[in-house]
Length: 336
Image 1 (cartoon, one colour):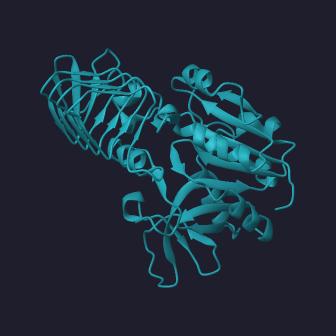
Image 2 (image 1 turned 120 degrees about the horizontal axis):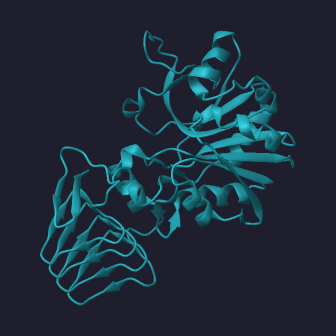
């Protein structure tokens, strides 16, 4: 790939509503994936392909995100764009027009998606094509849970972002993976204020006959939008079936299977932890049974507690939970 001036925006301004109550304690862009915040994994990949500068937009718990990610990644400087009101996926580019002015290409990636992004391939395809925007789409993810996905024709061109009224066997339904590359000419047409890529840019482009390219990928991709998707993503990330931070303490007669234990976790004698994610500082009491669960940061799980397919977090004033949740001993037990 020829050397080009590439700049990127990683979207990190959401509330993480669907991940509540976990996001009352950890901002969604910082949820850990085997010792690293999910957004940092994407930033490192952008630095590795030669991105010259990266912006991150912030809103909910923005200062915590800034303190965690700091000022640079892999020698690439980070610019933070603080949004007093959430501007949306497309509106986030508006305050960054001067930041993007030197760029020959612009990459935009969702900060809450987990993938080993095929970014070089995405850029090469964009440069070879004649489109102002090229989107990365998955050919291995079922589009039904994602609203039916997008419609891609044989020439790898997106023709629709909606499923209604579609009856064409030559079209393939694909899931947008949250990464797209843009030509800088698009920046001249940005609306002011809050705006969404699909409804405020891509669908109007299709309406006037403009092309939008698609790069199909079979890479593993995870949308961390719900607790169960987050649990699955953490357990499937990496080559090993489980992972433990170096300072984890596991007592004798403990069975830990296919699970991820983050920093400062302690598991007491006689407990079993299976297919679960245990977050920083949690303590699993003696004789507990934890299966297909998420144990939140700082949780002190009482001895002989059984947790199956639930997320457990402490109770505090800003903890939002569903009607199906139960509160016992200062802990929220949320079904996942």
